[in-house]
Length: 222
Image 1 (tube, rainbow, N blue to C red):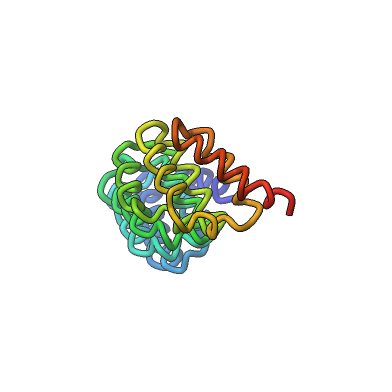
Image 2: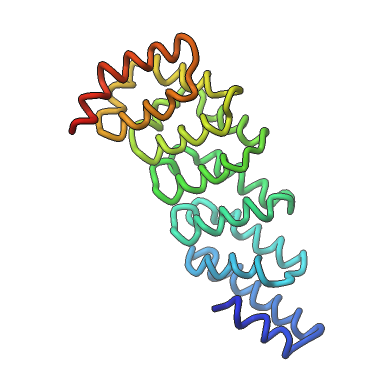
């Protein structure tokens, strides 16, 4: 609805008047809507349809960065962050800060449906530096993300996006961890092992085949 109304309004006001009104709207959204993580879809629409001046854009992005942790686990907030990471990644330090916040909060967000979606979206951008930072952040505790479906989805996405560079490292760490069986004691664990098997090579592939036969097949029948 916002996308239909604003362009008409902008035409009516015209010139500098339109710019001032846009600035006021952005100001209000920055200081009231964003912190409450409500109406985030409206904020996202602003980035899509407003010719927002650079100053206001930076102000809103700074506010989003400040409340990133709260916004990420909100349904609309999650969508907003994904839009920003996709379309405004080149804006600079503000969005870069949001990306680093995603990486810093990977453990908590991976336990949440919406937070997990933000992490997976960031991974899907396949930015080499972000993939590297995320892998280094999780290194040594990949198994901890395997205890719930949302965490497993993050791991699967990371393995798929990193392909040859990190896939072997991640898979090897997971399948050689003594906590693997405990982490996969549900039907989704079977699907998880089957999915990462597609990226396994050599010894890792052999170990995965054994694990699937020994532990995952009974789960599939549940």
